[in-house]
Length: 107
Image (cartoon, rainbow, N blue to C red):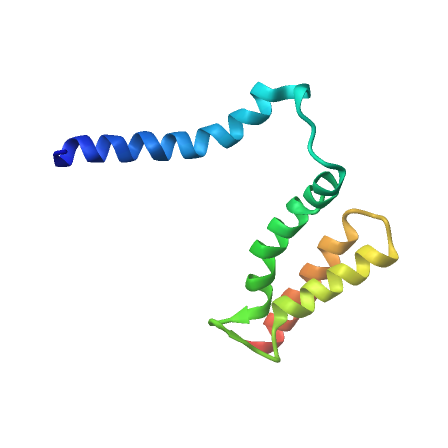
């Protein structure tokens, strides 16, 4: 097999590997249902994905965990505001106020 054919075969296999799992939910539709345990576990997937993206950015400063971290303090303030009040704007305002206040004091 020459180089061009193996390259096209690789593209085809990668395309199938990404398309088939996604298309299976559309093609199978209501004919197949996931087990209840898996359905309950999948409910946490969006929160886990968001945490995997956000938490490293909050905890790390320059690639290392730092005890004096304005981003972590802002996240804690936002979480506290969200837990005490149901207003969707207060966590944003409280977290940003703490973050910007600590950055202003540090620089």
